[in-house]
Amino acid sequence: MPSSNFTTYVFLPPMAKISGGLAVLLQVAEHLEQSDFPVRVVRREGGRPTLPERFRVPVMEWDQLQLSGDDVWLVPEGWANALTPGLRAGAKCVVYVQNWAYLFSSLPQGVSWKDLPVSLLAVSRPVAWFIKQALGRSSLVVRPGIDRSLFYSPERKPDGPLRVAFMSRKNKALAELIRDLFAARNPEFSTADHMIWTDIQGRSHPEVSKLLAHNHIFLSTGFPEGCPLPPLEAMACGCLPVGFSGFGGWEYMTPIGEAGGEDEEPWRPWFPVPNNPWPGNGFWVPDADALAAALALEQAVHIWTNKGPKLDQALRAGQLTADAFALEAQREQVLDAWSKIKSWET
Image 1 (cartoon, helix red, strand yellow):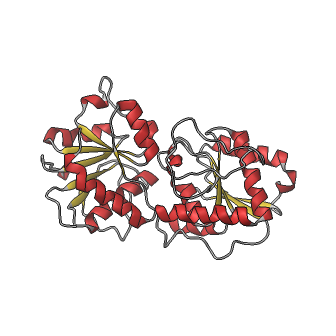
Image 2: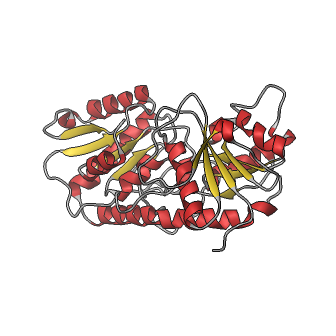
Image 3: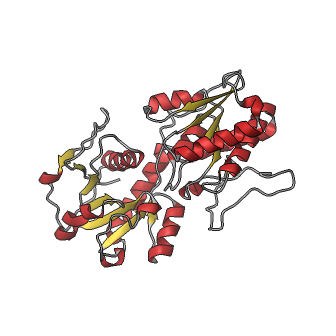
């Protein structure tokens, strides 16, 4: 694709470590740089996380920033004050909404998104729908991507006790309640001889991929979410996921049938859910419903214990889902969006 006639500047919020949202911003910058779109990432004082060694996008500091009216200034939704340089310069300001719950969190008192000349980019179709309902405005979608050379399913899962991965910081009290409910209903799985719990919190990507490859089930307790990556990475590594969607997870989550019994349909939310080409890839329940999550965990344990066609189909669906979120697919979405960016309505 030929080089554009504008430069994109990507604002990196001041954080000590690279969060999931920050990683997605870096991915977007890399896709642009590799496709000959001029791009720079801009760091601010107060937190300069160590960037990956392979990161080749030019980096500049906040006090070096000099925007023009021909530039694009990309800012995540929780940092509205960072829009100021772009607004002053008359640049094309784009707000990347990575979590619907923070859309209004950083707006100064008395300021509305409708007052600001900005375009909106959504991290998933549910988030785009939320923006439409909240502001009456449309937004293009650029989803996260996962590295399929790192996150992939092993040829064989370990024998012995079932292993359940989770992230302890995602609504910790609810995660503990789900575990307690499950143990109370299934005392035979209350010891390490039958079930091992694996906390993947705080691990590097290579460590997470290895741990997920050695687990059978992933318990998703995160909400709110714009497009949660942990359940997706777990699917890629051959885990059967259960739990909460965070709302944004419905970008890729499809429910496995018979959620409450042989004759019952799986639970579905009240809001419109995007259509996807793969069959059920997990047991999904309402956010914050600990008992429903414990029951979903029981179902996942049941089909892993019995194995057979239902498990095979669910795991295949997980691989199809993960393939749709490969970095190559993300790159196509980024390039499609940036080919239209100068004509977006504010």
